[in-house]
Length: 188
Image 1 (tube, rainbow, N blue to C red):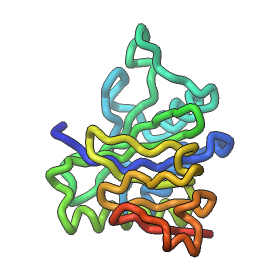
Image 2 (image 1 turned 45 degrees about the vertical axis):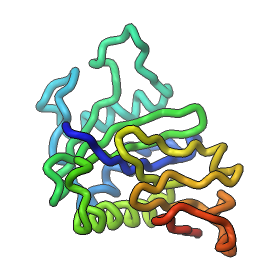
Image 3 (image 1 turned 60 degrees about the vertical axis):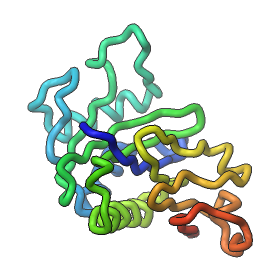
């Protein structure tokens, strides 16, 4: 895959009950349905239900692939049917204080139409699942960690970001605070 842009969805690690199924279902509702498994260390014929069961079991034990472990032990990545993108992939990322899903697409295909598609998907997932944040970044970027956002740090917003109002920059009335261009404050 060429250089990619990532849309990172960050969830509270205490809210993982059935999270994999709920997240994949919310993507489908948003117009980004499951296409196939990425056959990297696993059978290319895995069904979505098999992938959900595998990934949820890994998430339940907060599994992280070790350097000496084979990739077949890792979370299964899925491919989405998400026009106009030639490739759209989702994978699970664990941090010390977060559970995340990253949706990656070719950076060169993120034009006005592609940005609109990604924002539509993000807003739909936001409304349905209420993640703590949704941040966007290029291939060499990274989402700003939960603790830093709590401290008032600006999110990664290559094209947009959505922040829960638990963060200082996500609160109504935080308009006096500088935020990166493309940042949207969303509260509940």
